[in-house]
Length: 304
Ligand SMILES: Cc1cc2nc3c(=O)[nH]c(=O)nc-3n(C[C@H](O)[C@H](O)[C@H](O)COP(=O)(O)O)c2cc1C
Image (tube, rainbow, N blue to C red; front, side, top):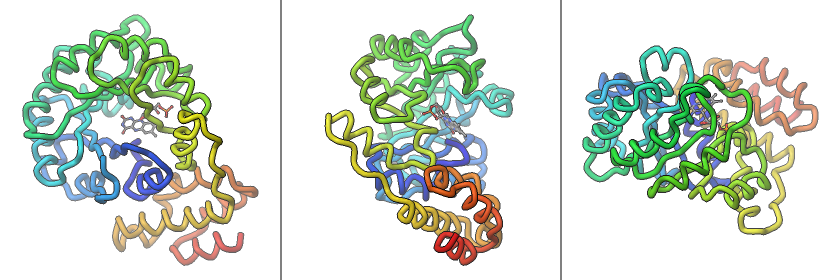
């Protein structure tokens, strides 16, 4: 998730049981232009494998070149193509969910990327369609499979829905039925019981968790326990969560270098979700928002 699943957050997800991690999405052109910040955004540690890097774009040749560069420089375990982002600035470039209105181009992009890499599996992430009048989930998924996608993740909403309403897991199940490659179901999984039910009822090969992991990276081990029919493990207590917030902030500072450590404002949105489950979370959020440096933050987390 753009703005959230950075290297530090993914480390926490991994610690708490996430089997597969994916980077924030990045556009193909800045990778080709060698923009330092974009390359930094897709960096990962060996412990984070199996690790996927997600790219978006509308030009098959650029997407292919970006994928080849990623394979050569970072050797991710897979490269994922975004066909789902509803954001205006992405759609206006004719990328993300906009490609669900032009399936021949979506297929062309997928095929170009799959052919540009030597040995890296390429996967796709999509929505159900542009809007409820143009549901293309089955046709899109089949075309992507034909183009060489080795797995397809489906977020059970249309672009028009944005993040409103509910993900339609019946349609996700239809895609799982229609494809030979693994289909990963995505949308609105916020607790372990729902996750286990989705696996039982839909025939998906895996689950993708987005917002449900924000501030709660332990959701992954809870889900695995529920699927295995085991009791849910205990959650980290408030002290452990506070320590986790500091560890995460320190990692973010280390990643961004001196600039990032000068003022913590830029990372507040990433830290705040962790305060939701802590007693006095609102007060803690206000205190964190007042911090300028990591040592301020340490003091606040140890005392507030
Ligand atoms: C802030 C935010 C950023 C996101 N960024 C991405 C992204 O970069 N790539 C992507 O495939 N999906 C992205 N998504 C969509 C999620 O991956 C996911 O499909 C969607 O939120 C539904 O799943 P969830 O209910 O588990 O969050 C983003 C969602 C949010 C809320």
